[in-house]
Every structure is written in C-alpha cells, then in structure tokens.
Length: 288
Image 1 (tube, helix red, strand yellow):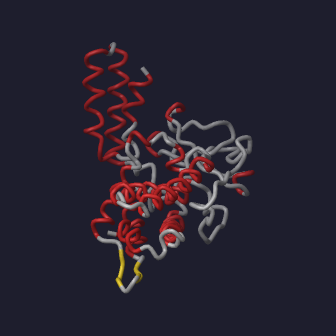
Image 2 (cartoon, rainbow, N blue to C red; image 1 turned 45 degrees about the vertical axis):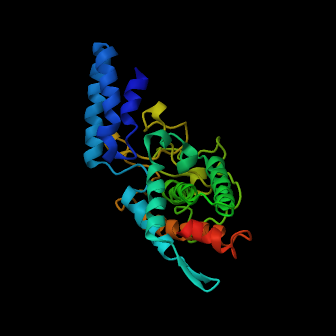
C-alpha cells in the first residue's frame, strides 16, 4: 500500500512531469488495488495535482538551475593554441538537460545527488568521483563528449543544491565551499541536535555546524529524525525548513549567488587539471 502511495509522490521535484509519471501507477492500481488502496491513491493524486499547480520544486526550481548553469558556462571564455574557446550552445543545452534530469523520479531519493539528509559524505564523494570521470573521458583517445557533458550537468546540479539545501548561508559564509569537488567532507554528527525546538528552525548545533534538511518519503516528507531539520514542503503542512529553492525562501539570493560562483569553480577545477589545461582536444570535447 505504501509503495503505491509513495509512487505518486515521486514527481515532486519535477511537477511538470506529473502526467507521464502517473499513468503506470494508475493503470496498475485499477487492476489490482482494493477499495482502500483506491481511496488512498485518489487522495495522493489530488495532492499531486495541487503540488503540480502550486508548489515550488524541492530543489532549485528547474528554470533556476538552468539560469545558474547557463550563467556559469557562458562566463568561461579563453584561448588555447590561438583558438578562442567557449561552451557551444549545443554543449550548454546538453549540460542543462543532464542537470534537470538529476531531479527525475529515479534520483529524488538519492540524498547524495542533492545534499539532503545531512549526506555530506555522499554528496562530496559524488563530486570528486564525477570530476575525475569527466577528466578521464575528455582526455581519452576518442572522447565521449556527450557522456562527459551529462556527468558535468549532474555534478553541477549537486554543487548548486549544496547551497540550496544546507545551512551554509545561515552559518554566515560569504564565499563558496572550496572543498566541493576537491575532497570528501562531513557535516554535523548524526547525534547533533540541529533543529531542537522546531524541525523548520535552526538552533543549537545547527547554528554552528554544517547541516541540511531531511527529505524522507518514509516519514511523509515532513517527518525528520529527532532533533534534526526538515527540507520543508509547503503544501504538506510543513512550509518551514532549510531549503532555499525559490525566491520566496529566506536566503535564496545568497544561495543562488554562491551556486553560480561554485559552478564556475567546479568548471575551473576540470579545465585547470594538468591533464586538461593545455589539451585542446580534451577542452573542445567538453566545450563543443
């Protein structure tokens, strides 16, 4: 029963895909569900429609991710071996597409993709691995350019979500986290109390240590482990939380600004890698 209801919530980061993602669960349920299943499914469908019409996505909204990524990519311009280089429009489109698909249903519960659930080890390891994978692909004899750009789009999404989903801004940081893409790191201990009185309000260790909001289907998206902070889902009755996913959220402007700078930094890490920096073929493979 819970699996059926949960399947209806998996569009939440991307409400625009609601129709496509609902067709299979609806068909399945009408053939196999009990009356109680159908009642629960109808409730979840109504909520899904409401979310699709009114709710902000539970990550930087897709258009915001696209704006951040395009701004960062378009800022990269230089010459190598006498050739002026910049990201082509095709490359930008491919990278943006991969960035957007990081919010697809299959990846919504992957905390490392979004720095949810205090998964700083998972998220930071993901970025280190993706950066290395991108470099290895573009320096290969026959570079798989599309695959490398896909990895880059996914990595940039994770970089950007660090600022939207963590308390980096609330901790008073005016610069980017230079560990992103370079090393693995952790945040607050899982026993640290980060939102002591209200899961939507930072306090105690949450005012001193790095933390992020919890986004758990198993707890109805609003529930969190004791003493921890939630992501925040307005239409489920828990609007307060750490996310800075759209302009209505406190800290959004600063988070967006840092996400742009951090995206540029991640790009620079790749392009300044000793294996890439003077390798015209590798650079053109990535930039188009």
